[in-house]
Amino acid sequence: MNQKIIIAIDGPAGSGKSTTARIVAKRLNYIYIDTGAMYRAVTLAWLKSGLELDEQNVNNIVDNITINLIQGEQQQIVLLNNEDITQEIRKPEITKFVSPISAMGYIRKKMVAQQREMGKFGGVVMDGRDIGTVVFPKAELKIFLIANAEERAKRRLKELSLVGINQSFDEILQSIVQRDQYDSSRDISPLSKADDAIELDTTNITIDEQCNFIIDRALKIIERFNKFCG
Image 1 (tube, one colour):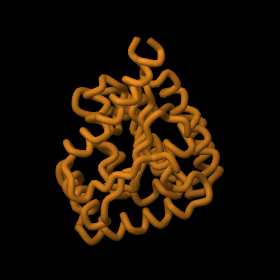
Image 2 (cartoon, rainbow, N blue to C red; image 1 turned 90 degrees about the vertical axis):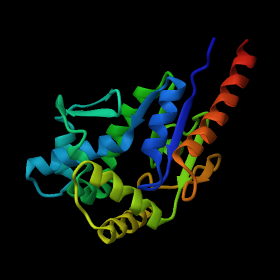
Image 3 (cartoon, one colour; image 1 turned 30 degrees about the vertical axis):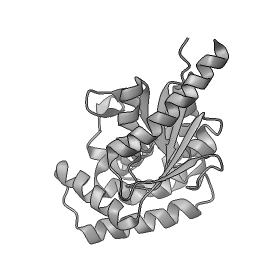
């Protein structure tokens, strides 16, 4: 048998979570789940509603939408009510409001339940801000990625330019710093490193290096499971 484990990758915005998780999942033949995209989809649904940013309004919205994640050839496809919103949810206006919406208790409860359902059989690489602490606290491998704010801003600037979104470096840097503070200090599921997570600073290493680091540890865990079960 080949044991399927859960790999939880957490960290702040721009630390390389999504790119790393996607590559690791592909190389292990696992399912990649970008939980941040789910909160961005909720944020987009709220923006389209035209309603005030009120917790009850957002709660009502999330009860009447469907969010699906599909594995595409190059990236994860995000569907909101069967509409492809993969690119739309990366726009600055979504980034501006995703933190307060993702901090709402009922929204997190709904999204976490869906995320747990997606990963209950293992064989997933899931990235976010509370995967190793809240969603899957018993995940077999937990990674916490960090990088300095300037490097993360450079990465986000490059990502946005590739999809035709123009934003200055200073604007992105300010947004990242503000989001770090908000996500780390919120009352519900704050961004924090699980006690048993491996911290990896990605500031001065390549994507390949960080992916190899994670895959090496994942394969060792899988090997131990297979020996035990065999």
